[in-house]
Amino acid sequence: MNRDAFIKYLTDNGCVVVRNANQGYSVVRNVMNGKISGVPKEEEVYNITACRICKTLEVDPPKESEDGQGIVDLAHKNHGSKE
Image (cartoon, rainbow, N blue to C red):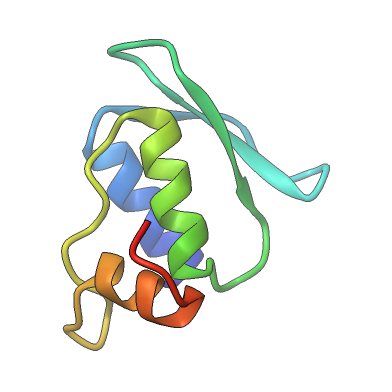
């Protein structure tokens, strides 16, 4: 998933960027619960990484990737497990 689209998704779902990518990742905080996580500065964020970041921030993962497939399903398929 594109990094900019993922950060926009997080900010649309109640998160704020606390610090931009100067150490290899941006720090994002969920203002509703105070949870924080890092988003890698690479242009593309792996689907499994996006799912884990959403889980840490307690935000529902995006339903679809840019190609219209379910991002959670893609993450599990590419990672080889359903857990």
